[in-house]
Length: 498
Picture 1: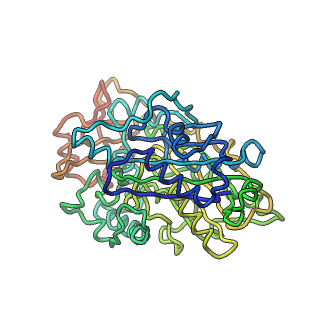
Picture 2: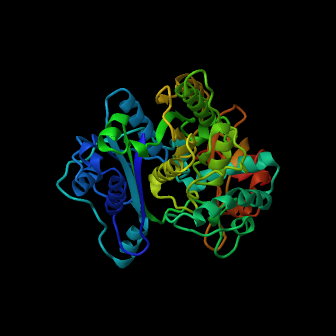
Picture 3: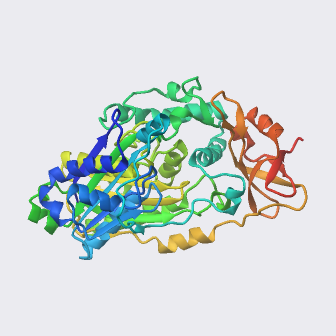
């Protein structure tokens, strides 16, 4: 169960991630002071900004938590929910009593220090490095690395091109659709005191390119992309019912009903369908099956039984693929976020989902009895997934963790072989594409993923600047399904008309 949470935001003073974590922990522990001395495990979500080798141990010293286990997670926005699922399993098995899960980023402060020529905070020296837990597999493979396809802001727009093509949209039309999808997120952010951009925006403002809302990567405008420039932190306290009763905070309990995790085909260039997430669909099935067992007495829990939702929202394609996989309408009356989403609430590195869980459990704690809610987390490129269902009343059957083993094997086996290059000029069909643009709107890159006649797939970069310029003049969704010519040697392409 989650008995307490804390969130913090800093807009003015320079801070470090550990400073923000300390603030969030103190807020959480203020709601459950009797648990400060009972924490068995302190888990810190992976920190992007510099925090030294032992942020968990440094934080433990600062907040007076003598946890025997102090650890740091691997990379991924899925890790906060994974940490909750793991903790809940351990608590249910009697291996754990109280855990503190916390994370923060201080990217605004880091940039300010760098601009002023000041040293970065390195964390306390002399502490041994904290152990690292979680899935540490890389986000890209040799095919993506060969063309420098490494960052989310380039990969997610490529996934979006598939969705736009299937919807029959050109780029402007799809931007309008995405504006309609994301505008309700801003309404939630506008009412959230911890949101970086508490501003309500309409669909047209989000969708229309302008000097303040440039196209970053086709078809995304700046207002559609996760914001990685905030100083934000969040912490949650997860414990057993017995520990909550001993501390006198059982009345604050929000119960973890079920959890599930899966991984899509690891590397984007190997995916058989770049517009779908079989892993989210599998995790969703396992999650609701587990929640139904937790509900007891032959009860069934489905997506329609949820009162609150927070769908991971780093980019529109993540929202669109998740809602499709989970059977949730994009205009669901419940809304798709309890924070405002990563473009508007803020995207504090890997820790956004800790904020989502804190916000979700607060709503359940303060809402009508019997409510249920769901949080989802995503790591890498719609790659790693963790989902959780929370309830304001205890599940009669206890916490259950969904079994995704069989589905995971099928997903892994569906990976498509990739090619590093070809021996002669070869036609290929475009599966996904984007055009990267600079601050002046000029095209600077145009990566794509294509399928060769033999069924293998390739991540491709333009052969030269002329191809980049030509790609910049085309409608990206219209490129999906068209042909390019792969040049011999490195993974480079020319347009078929060349």
